[in-house]
Length: 359
Image (cartoon, rainbow, N blue to C red):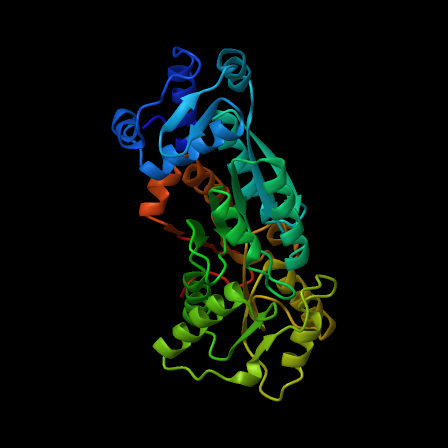
């Protein structure tokens, strides 16, 4: 299969070339025959023909077949100049983990002459629904999305995408109950790896500070809990904090203060992300404690925050660029991605001063 375009678009262009050699009102071969000729699934043929009927290039007669319209030659030439367009939904293009994803998708889209429309959802289900509906109405040929996580979930837009025959791919996380190809990072392993490193660095009371409960935070928590269990260390719920909101202002600071006020304070903290770790640094500094000596810290995302903190932060690096590349490739080769719908990418721990080397 040629991956220079989505499969159904490739078939569609091949059909246009074939149709342009036919006379108006000449009958098209059967769907079964076309499936054999183009080595494509019948559903792919059906979708391409359906769009060509909608564009006036073909017309159907009930019980008789599909025929070439009068204006095929002019319309076919114009069709070849149109640009394939994808929609990309992300929570916030300015948030530090999403530029890598956007760049990966953009690079693949550029290689395949695809235009990308970027929509920010601010993690709101309501905004996500509005954007999906607008993108469907605008005629996009595919969609990649990092699903929202805030508000009341609305599954109806995903059903609309399926009904419209628009392929879509989840990136970074997925939506429970919706079957679609997805490229995700192994968040369980991120939590497990970070906690194992703190244990190896000599920590015996390891706390966890996280964003509110949702799929990614739950997976990292499970990795954290599994590493403790494997080391026969107790999981103390008084040393686990899921913050109440997704606000980034002051994240991690109050939660770390809460932990540090305990009579038996932790000697290690696994933070859900680098922003939370920065808040924890501020809380430790106020109490005259030193990161990496009095309390070791490991976080996730490996952003530029890590190198700018006074004690450089150990953090789990997520393969954001690769996630974007693979999500775009799944959209390019959507038929193949339906056969292998889940790609799980592995993170990498970057060790710095906040946790010290493994002992």
